[in-house]
Length: 89
Image (cartoon, rainbow, N blue to C red):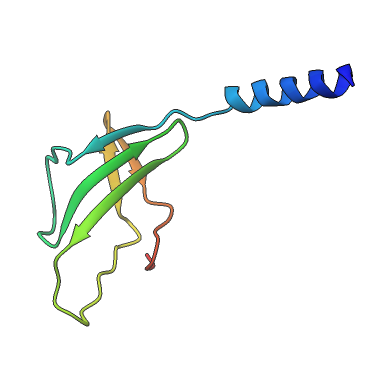
């Protein structure tokens, strides 16, 4: 019984230590856009990913498509887009 309780406490402490901290920036300042169709509303940063949330203004039935060369620049480094939800690159 003590082993089960000890193992359970160990697993809970390991799981708590694995929690990723997420930094969120609401309505960030953007230096450069190549389009007026998309606005960045939110950026979520973790140790392994950067997630951008956009709002879009477009004519109905005209679809938005991002180029395969889409990237962000942070600290002089060019970071490529590796995935997108609800559409394709």
